[in-house]
Image (cartoon, one colour):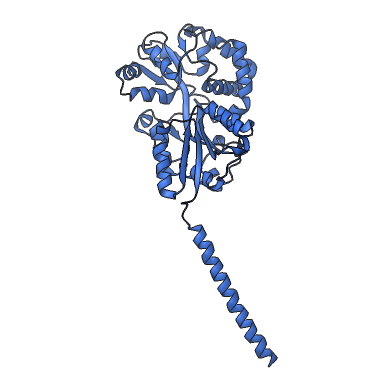
Length: 354
């Protein structure tokens, strides 16, 4: 009789256990497949709204996660995050150039990205060593020259710009610009600080005018004959070539892009990138957004819209970029550019690059 009762109790307990397990599983499944309707992600973006809003709206539609976007100058957003501290609503920080991303990291404004679905999509050279930022597109800093320049075949490497041949022939923006700081950081990494300083000092001696204006202004200056060579990011040339304003379009048509260092380590490359804010209240949604930005469809749209190169391999590039052919880029880890930014700024000051 005791054995019969024992078996009966065992069967009853087993049934109860199965029912509890089933209910728990159904509840877990329900949560895993739940709508994100009550979730949100707050973005601080140094990129203009028109360059990212269509993708963000699609993200909202596809995931149900509400997107709140604030756009401003990247440096202003970094200061804002710093002043807001723990009360900052920022979840995601989007900006251009690894120098700014590393600055935000050094100021303690970012946290590690712990989603494997994000990290495994991109080459390690475009990811912070502590996973606090990741690239979402690539850009090349190179030169634009006048189509009428007779000796342009002599210009093969960035280092050539330090030669006397180019005296009073180069236009570039100021040393305060983060693009130039990262470019000089790459020279320090590739040549050592002593040689890099000599190169940059000679480069400054070849300037046609005092540095001023943005990259578009440098291209315009070449078109007007104020200089023969402009140091710019490649996509500015494309923006002007596709401009609805005849003057900008004509300036681009009068010039051409030359990609440097193709026979050695490759052209200087940088990124636009993203990080998760240190005090994010919506970390899961932030990870979802970054993962979404690295999906093939998003990468194609983002790269095409911004005239940049995708960071994910195998993604289709724009027609203009395809027409340029395969461009060899420097394999230097962008972590080095961030690490060397303070040294680059000091070097630029020493050589008198205003």
